[in-house]
Length: 467
Ligand SMILES: [Fe+2]
Image 1 (cartoon, rainbow, N blue to C red):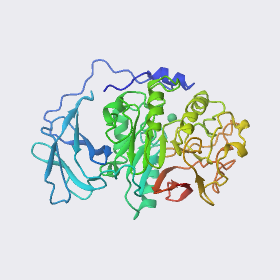
Image 2: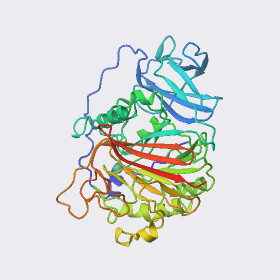
Image 3: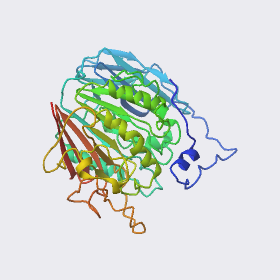
């Protein structure tokens, strides 16, 4: 189904109160690249895993335009890749390439498979220990689960001052995670590829940097304010028809899925309407959360409701709307955790409910649902409406926002809903350091860990869910 495409680049920048630094360079008339003499069917992207469920997975890849008869071969063992699925060409509109999609169905839950992707006469990739997929566990039933969360990772491009930073953050996590159980999924929290989210920018910012992970771990994308083109929709396959659990969204802007005893909901606050209660996304969100099964409800979107970094949530109109319009919906449906980025800092809240105003109206006695900060002792959380949620701002996968001395009021990492961190900067309720976030859930225990680019732990908190 066609995605919702609502904003032009300049409309989008205006909505954020920002003027674009520069307009895209116009095409040079009269010049064109020569046609390739002969195409080889060479692999140009991927493979990467999408929309995994307990009985299915989608494998995507790209060739240079010369491949024929794309197919996926898979099986339980490397020497027994004896199941074959024909791949289909995806209509992306990207010139000079062929994007392939193989939908594998009828699989067993919680099971690992090896795979290879092939063209007419050759194996393009796989048939080795680096290429495998694992189906989701039985929905609703507890199973130890681990998700790697990347906020604002898309900086790997020459000319921004940030190339290499996402690689550094990635390397820190790889160091930290060595020898630990496998990761079940990767979240991209938006601003995945600067500056306009073009297909070429995605190639360098996402597919080149995380190639080794994406060929064995499903990626769950989210739209941020730098997804300014619509190339995102040609790149990703999301379970918009409820293929992986949850209520079908009917569009590829937002979606949900189940994994073990967790229900994940991914929102688009940029290209699709959400501020009006009658908007399709809001109506779908209400229904999706009301019908969610399992012990945990987790929402991912790009914009933080509370923030005191580059963006200050008392004065930034967009963030005020997130707090006033979206947060009450999440609280009323018992959402446990809200993941977002946008600000290139790490900030993490107490267990909160009902605080929708500026920071001056925050009353810990009223708005904190449990006394613990989650670090020294676990946060104990109930179930159901207004049982409290924790907000994580982790926009540090590709850049760290330096302090701005010219802005002494707005930029001090001092929002009172946020937990004071031992290594916190300025007012200590946040950290300005490259890093990525690890979400681990085992039964009724949730552990969140922010890992820096050296592999060190910046913050680790625990939530215990009452049975
Ligand atoms: Fe952003």
